[in-house]
Image (cartoon, rainbow, N blue to C red):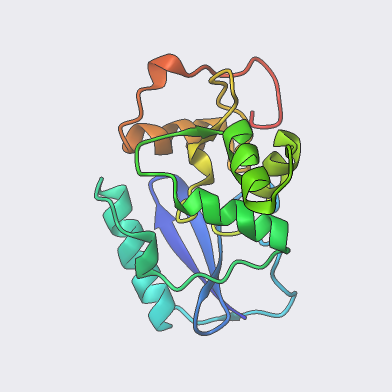
Length: 178
């Protein structure tokens, strides 16, 4: 496993790769930071995937809309989590979706009558490729800005960068995202 650091407007970001694909992107201090990495890693900033990811992040933070498909992604997780992360990749730039809506999509894909929004929240929270796989675009059914492992302030900053109308969303008084 290889790692490098990227300095973003949100602070330091750790990037991880298996040598070919991006397997991790964590904001320093976020919940589950580097949770899917083995203890032994090697710093290798010049890997082509890291060069491409830095370019992608530069464009994103400059307000452009880089395509997720431009990066080779290989997040590590079970089938349920990967299905949730796949839906996250389909959320358009500048838009939000609720955990419940994702649960309905997963239920429809699997032929189940329903799916737990809390189970979806767990998968969203364990997304190992933050920002690129846009878990910050997921909100509570009531418009609550909850559930971001990087913290509520960073979630708001990312949504503002994308031009999301925050007037219809609200900051929770308490919860795990604070």
